[in-house]
Image 1 (cartoon, rainbow, N blue to C red):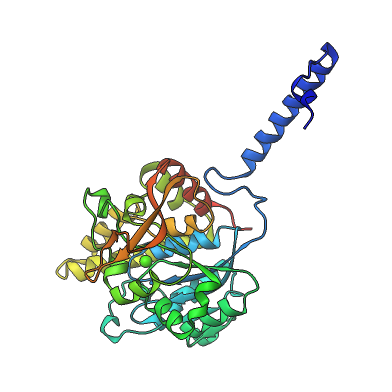
Image 2: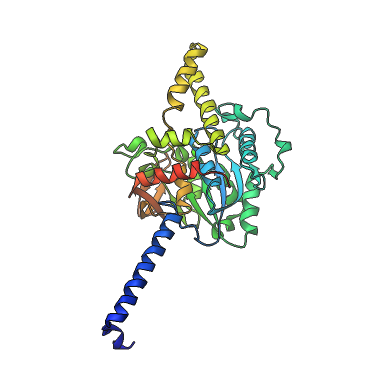
Length: 361
Ligand SMILES: [Ca+2]
């Protein structure tokens, strides 16, 4: 390399040109920054990310928030949604109805493995109880596990498997076709590394791991790249006050359906716990919560990690899944990318609000 490059002494004329160039560059950068939502990837980030979404939607409500975030994020090419845990067919109806509202019936749905002991416990399935799955204009796979295997094996580029529930479907897919681990990456809302629920100072046996421990152990030892948001980061995400009110007031049809689901889900929870309440008392309790704040939005962070890690601190940690459902740092464990802290939780909340209130294109 020529040393001249470091000895450049600008003349008066050239410094004017140089300042002009810098000014134009600054303007360009400002416009580019405005074009991207804060915390999200730039709009021109390249090809879409192929994704399979495996969800236990209808148990906690945060999966529905995650699904709407996914559908409102143009970064993704959603190849398949599979339902996990319990009455996975009733759950598929909720997904199908949401996809119809979103105008995205091009997305196939796979019915996941059913576990009889869980059937009848889902608080949200009433929202789609009259929906006829046979009327879904897109494809419904009766064998969701095989659909996961086939979608990954037939893909020409690596797929991200984003999972926001316990992992019976993903473990079964790995069992049926171990080669999927070589053609996919895993992103999940799982575990608890240094903090537990609600930001508590000790880790918990996190539900998605503990509920199906052997399935989690299978997934956490497969030969794929893994990224997780443990409770350390996802367990403290909640929208309240002005941020929540923006979502509540959104005219986006999909976000309105989300809030409708939140109301159905919350009401069923109140009815389950307080059987003696009158109708007006139930209405009051539902309105007090649903009109004021979200619940903890754990699963939305997994969707975010599938497209960006800008707002979180990532650590590569060796993780084992213990038989009692903990995710412990242990030298014998598989090295996993863990989002262990927020760099800017407020910016993530803003990102979430912007995506959820975006006018449908
Ligand atoms: Ca979930």
